[in-house]
Image (cartoon, rainbow, N blue to C red; front, side):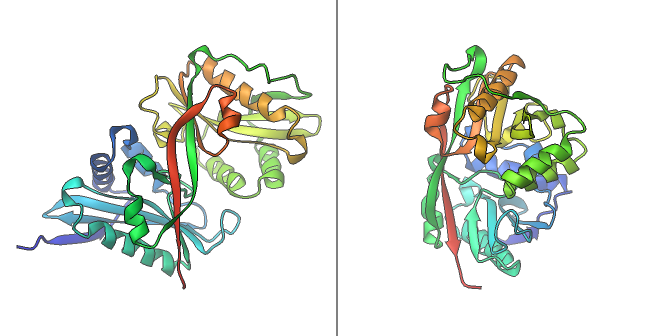
Length: 321
């Protein structure tokens, strides 16, 4: 007898749907990539000018698969033609039955309806992952459906328990410290000038959320104002630390990134001083296992004791509208 399947839209306000997504993902991924209800709830919130949509599939009244996708009309972050397949998973017992293909095709149809002609796996504004974790060996599924790998990115990690500033960090004509209330406009002005894309938009979004702790940003002040920033994540930050999958690392957990300085300050030690100050703050707050996510700068972070932690392949597909 053919198994009856039911496809229903994901309701981000329905806790049963949230729990189903968590159960499906965690059953189909390795334990080091587990997600939590807190992470799912955070990631399903749509961004300004954006849309997030998803579908659950049930077989015999049991949730066995899901897909989440997103798009945004704000060209500041990405061209409106770009959309994201944020997450897709099918329980092991229901794989190789066409469920993953049907869920992916549905997500692609939704993206087309939003005007998207480039579909990216992961790497969205509220990402579950910045790409396909290479240890899951799911590349073949996406290649079968017309996706190809664009590049490889990494998370890097270090144990900050015994962190000491590298000798390459030298004094600068400036001060790095946590951001303070009342400096929001200064930080946004800096980001609009130097990083007017995703980082500026993401900061705007975070500042709109009442639970955001502004001091999770570190800012570099010089004689002309803010000339650099980095964002930190602690276990009690509004941005879920689970987003970075730190489970194999020693607790407490922390994360650093994004990080950037003004273009005309680069190559003069400002970035190193900013990174060092952020790491020292994490260390001083008891953080041991620390992740810097979604990067290709392995040599740079290696100077601060970081080693490759997780590898991702960023896959995309281009279609005609």
